[in-house]
Length: 166
Image 1: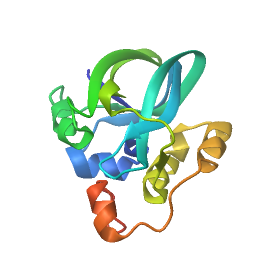
Image 2: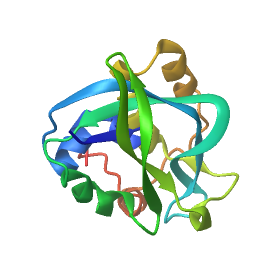
Image 3: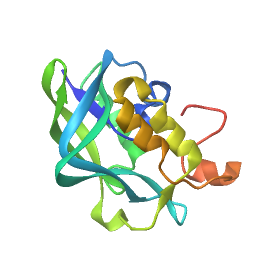
């Protein structure tokens, strides 16, 4: 079995399906001793994508996808900008069924910056992962400060669309 842990926009199951096809199943998962940050610079100045950073005592909640075949993670790589925008590591994800080793994308050091905010449309994909998140975690996500009112051209540069989950 191969697993992929999504903590950002890929918590939206429709987005994952549009990108890499069907997966076997999806579980709620927790990446311990990491924290969620919006510090991964996008292609649009000032706009962030989600990232995880090693922080003792923090946790990142997300969606754990059981891939239909091991090479399916390579289908996700272009969407995540692997290996230039994000690296990929196997990390332990805690679930109700035990600990699963899963692929996790982590922002490349040269692509990290401070004082960034995600686009509203990007954050909506994270919030679509409600079924995999605790109420407190989902509520905290809903309070993230965002950039509003981006036009369709800018959204496309960010890999977002008002008209498609992809």
